[in-house]
Image 1 (spheres, one colour):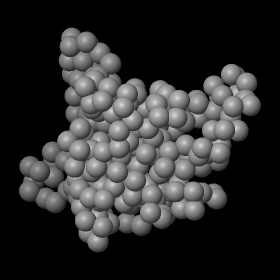
Image 2: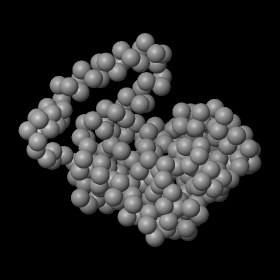
Image 3: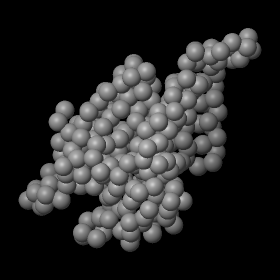
Length: 257
């Protein structure tokens, strides 16, 4: 791939944006390569947890404006197909069967903030800025709004998406984009330690089912959510991981996940 690097070591996979000269701005090819990388990582038996990071000073500057300009000559059908490519990428990351951690060491703007939003856990350096600036160029933060409302609730979503304000990492943590703020010289090791804790101390099947549970119950009413949770409980109890975990706990043996 031209714009995305992929590596894996000790069950930790790294998907790295590699278009630093354009501040890792999204174009058609980068979106497709990210989609390809995440699909590969989901099936990669050597990878249990995934980190999304970037080369250069920016995490992701959003859509490549030169690419956006070229889309103005597209038909509605062509623009719809292009929009669906980004929709498919965000949906893929959000629903991936493995935990995805964003390691944000530079500004995440517009589509870049969208990438962070759809990840499960977000680490940021203090200097990083976040913002959904689409309204400032006559565009609409349409696809990310679906995930933003889930993550930030309506109040923060309206403030951020309607104003296009750029916020710092502390505000991003307050609203829910960011989970942890770590200094530049520590973020890599902190992300690695967090990922290794998941790798060594949690069940892959449990992580997958828990992510699915969180995604699904937000679409259901209370009774339907409880019934779905009950069914998932029953499913989990029959899994090999649950049997292994309970037996190891009762026998006071270390669980090798």
